[in-house]
Image (cartoon, rainbow, N blue to C red; front, top):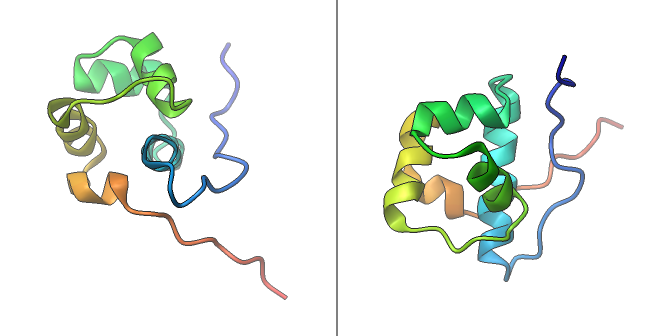
Length: 90
C-alpha cells in the first residue's frame, strides 16, 4: 500500500521556475489526495515523468503544463506563480 501523499517541505527559490512548477504541482496533487500515478493517468503521461517534474529534473513543454492544469482544475499560469508561504497560527 502506498503512503499518503505529503506536501512539499519547503518553498523553492523565487528564481527557480522548474522548482516553482514542481512545488505547485505536488501541492495541488496532494491537496486532491492523488498519487503521482493518478495524476499521470489523468494527464496521459508516465508516472516517472510526473516524479521528475515534481523534483525539477525536466524542462516541461507548454503542452504538458496545460495537461497538468486541466487535470488539476487550475489555470496553467498558476502552476508557474511563486507560492505564498503559509504562516502557522500564533
